[in-house]
Amino acid sequence: MDFLSKINLLSFVSSLEFQIIIVLIAFIVSLVASIIIIPILRRLKVGQIERTDGPQSHLKKQGTPTMGGIIIAITIIAVTALLYLKYSGTEKEMAMNLIPLAFVTIGFGLVGFIDDFKKLILKNTKGLKPAYKMIGLLIVAVAFTLYLVKILNIGTQTYIPILKQYIDLPIWVYIPFAIFVLLATTNAVNLTDGIDGLSTSVTTIIVTALTVISIILGIKEVTLIGCTIIGACLGFLLFNLHPAKIFMGDTGSLLLGGAIAGMALYMKMPLILIVLALIPIIETISVMMQVAYFKKTGNRIFKMAPIHHHFELCGWRENKIVSIFSVITLILSIIAINII
Image (cartoon, rainbow, N blue to C red; front, side):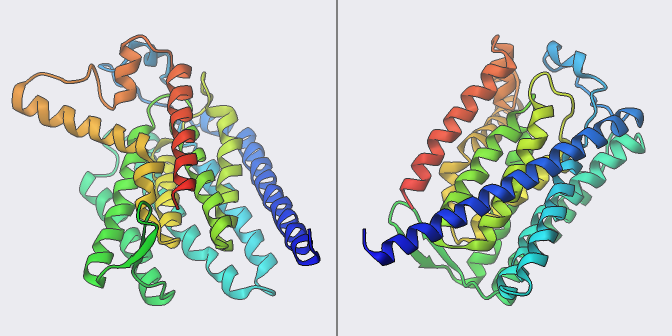
């Protein structure tokens, strides 16, 4: 190994060590926040409301603290602020670019928080009106997309994984396409959140894959945000695995959906989500199929949708569903990394 190769290797190892440190810091912040916040939510009686027509095993979860996505949000805000302070003097442009990535993540989470707050704190069982919820998500999606195109000037290039090349989309195609990716991904992750640890586990693997891709491409701001989200999710997951001590609510599921879509769009790789986020996509398709088929025939394709509930009613334990869906996502992540 020549001298330059040794320098590059040492630089990579040093960078990797720092990325691990970010994950650990976010993990510790998330862990501490969970220990503090879960009892508070329990005292406030911010409890899960279970459907009586759902799996009967879920009825015992009634009253389990929810809205736990605020733990992930607090962690992301705290660690991102530290990273901004660290790099604002030496890599100001990169530090500034952390802001839109944090914005799209927390922005979607804020919409979910308002919905959770109305349902769980104000005891309005309907929560935020669907139209208002969509408007809120749309505002965040449009703001992020316009920031990418008009402020950061990243262009409209979109990577085609199979062809392994970029194509330039017309601006009038790219903007609605990017908004669709943001809204669709957020909705898909939201539908995946239905059993203990499922959405957290699947999205953590997806974010990890996107972070690895950002390392390969050398997009440092995405790497830093990705490591922060990974650590935040791992800390939360300790309390979210079956039997869950806390659920993330819309605050968490919308937040994570925004994070995934935002990272992919920032790297000009939204189409990679077709592979990476196949589980959330299947969850969404199962709901669409169920609704369409029921309206047409009065019968159901699945015992219950989203599809993870179908497997539950077929006798699968929650841990089995989470394990299988996570392994599938891990395999898809390896495939996605190898086709970029």
